[in-house]
Structures are given as C-alpha cells and as structure tokens.
Image 1 (cartoon, one colour):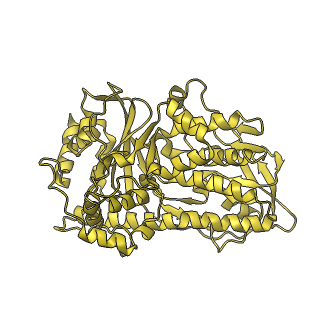
Image 2 (image 1 turned 180 degrees about the vertical axis):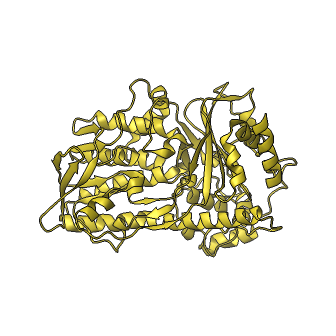
Image 3 (image 1 turned 135 degrees about the horizontal axis):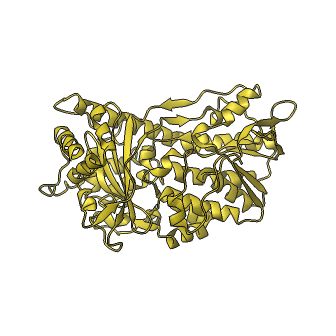
Length: 475
C-alpha cells in the first residue's frame, strides 16, 4: 500500500477485514500521539494540502462506514463528530414525510485530520497491518513479461514483494510514473479546471452547545451566489470552518488572505454572518488559501489503459473532483471497500484487475462529468458578473437540464424534488439520473413557488464585497 492518507488507510482496513496482510508505506512522518482532536491540530500534512480546509463526510461516506466499519463512525461521534440530519431542512409535505432511504440523508461534520487520525489508529492497531512512515515508493517490481506487479522498490532501495500493489499516493498518482519507468505505456489523464480559489478559517464556539445560526443547507450554512460562495461547515465538538470561494479570474479577491478582509466578507454573507459574531465564536487559525485542483480521471483506470495485473489505484490516484463538492473522501471510501470485495472473489489476477479498473471507472466517471459541468456553469455565471454584464447565465442542474435556481425553488416546496437534489449533492444518486426522470421534471414545473425571501437577507453585490474587503484590510 503506497500512501497513508484516508484512501490508503481505508483500503488497508477493507483488505485486512478480508484476511489480507498489509504493509502501508507512507511518505509522511508519524502522526502526533495524544487525544485525537488535540493531536490532529498539531499534525502537519504538507502532502495533503486540502487537510487544512473545511471538510465534511457526505451521506455516501457515512453510509459506507455504517455498512463496513461502524466502529469508526462510532469513534468519530465519540470524538465530537456531528451527525447532521439533512431532513431537518426538508420542506413540509402532504405526502409521507419519510421515505425509504431517507435514513441515509446524514452527513458527518468533522475536520479531515481528526477523521484521518481515527482511521490511522484503527488500522495501526490491527495485528495484520504494518505502517512504515517516512518511506517513499520509488518504483514497481514487475514479472518478466511486464504484465503483473510483484512488489515495489523504495527510495532506500528496499525491494518489497507483494501479491498486489495499491497506489494511494493522492494527487501525485505515482503509479503513472512507476509504469512509465518500467516501460509500460500510460494512457493520458482527462482533466478540466475548477476555475476556483478558496479561503478557509477555523473558529471555536464560545458556547459549544449553541449554534449561532441555522444550517440552511442541512449540513452547512451559507450559499453559492452569482460572484462568490460562502459556507459554514460544523466540525467536531465546538469547531467549525468557514470557506469562501471565488473565481480564479477575480484577482481583487486575493484580499481574502487577510484576516480582516475575510471577516468583512463573512459579515456580509447571508447565514454566515451570525457565526463570526465575536460574542458567538473566535478564530483559532489563520486564513488558509488553496487553488482548487482540476477535476481529473486518471488514465490508469480508463478503458484506454492496458491493465497491469495486481496494480490498483484508489482515491485521488484514480480520479479527483473539485473539493468544493466534498465528494473525494466519500468516493474513496466506497472505492476501497468495493475493491476489497472484488479481490475477495478469488478471480484470476488479470481478470480481477480488469474488473477493478472497470469498477473504478464506473464509480468515478459520472461524478467527474458532474463536477466538470458544475464548475463550467458556475464559472460562466461568475465571469459574466465579473465582466459587469447586466444578466448572467444561470447554471443548469445537469447538462441540458432545468436551471438550478428553478430546481432550488421547487425543492423549497416539493419534498420529492428536494430529496432528489439532496441525494445528488450527497453522492447517493447521480444527478443525471434524477433530473432525467419525467416525473421529477414535471414536479419541478408544477411545484408551488416558495415564499418571498426574508427582507434583508441577500448577498452583497460584487462592488459591495470589494468595498468591504478594502475596508476590512485597512482596519
């Protein structure tokens, strides 16, 4: 197992649950010891740049843990993780309020390092797992015909024989380089930019039992508007994160790196403002910036790639979607346990590799396409506003589908539309499937209009936002 982040640790856990012996080779230094939440705050993760930003575990991830590792979900809750019931914001309905599957509409609020540390300690505590920190995999060992992986070589020259090799090296996706160095042709990746920069800061509630404002999104508070986004994500215990997203093309918003400008933007943002009231919370980190990476399907999982038996890419090494949508960890968990199930079938090595590649491609490809669509649609809207255009193009919920504002309005009064929208956003159902259903489209068309917005709750114009950033930075 090359890589000791969540994807690698989840795969190690899934394999050991089925009788495999696993050695995890992690480039990073060992994690700090001590209570999980406190240790996580001192855990430097330079190889996991998204670690210091807001995260939550989608319903798909929660469901996967409930099915395959409920003890880890229990541990997360014991460490202060919050199970956030999405149905709390469902619209009133004349039909039965709860339907089969609604029990899965739950997200987990928890900082990524805390959840990752729980995975690490769970895996490290198993007798059939060895975790080697500070160890970099340099290349593959291949059979004489080059068609089967037989182990790896580390940067220190250690040759480690293995029945299978798992690439969980994240954004680096090192199996591509390993294959190329071994003379195996590697299919090119397919990528599409996210067009997004994000700024995150973590806060602590002064009264841990009191939320300063409602979670209007079920698992979060805030929104995505016509020129920026602002979202609060509750995390473990008394901690929450606020993330502001802006277009990469809008250089004026780089002022958000400044803590005063960041707070000024939060104070103008609907549903976010109460969370930065100094009587309610205080920040305990600096503002952290990240350029959201491109959406990517790795060539090594596509039908274009010649399979190398016994080599498997998981998580970001297989595919990556814009972290704004929070799908990465949940998809990685589903991938890890699905791969372990497939390997447990005892198929010939070549056949299991082909099946695993096809399974990974089927898992990730639809979400890659959805992320590309969502990013391009949002970028078109934001660029139009940035150019000063009077009207901006409205993003559609799926390619060729109804406008997202129309769907959101219908979801405010129609529980079926709401359910479809939320199940798509939580990766339980593919939005392309939900919003091609004629019955759902008809309900969108006929849903009652929602009540008028509450007076005074509106996002700032771009001019108002930039003025606030300038004033906040000067103060």
